[in-house]
Length: 98
Image (cartoon, rainbow, N blue to C red):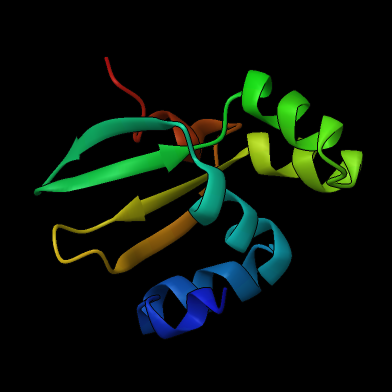
């Protein structure tokens, strides 16, 4: 899946700045199993460790699946990716349910 066709200019820029590869974004977009409302009619979609283990069992590279568990995609109500960020550290905290 070419995630860039549904990603905003901002999301593509942030992915480049944060060194997040297209394969990981596509993996999370395709297999995300958790959704968290983050305000502004947006949701953060993430990949759980349980789903990552399932994907590894189906042949996904372990490193790729592990990277996917540390990534959050913020998706707007239109289905467009608003931004891409790592869940770890202070930046990721504001996109977690409180």
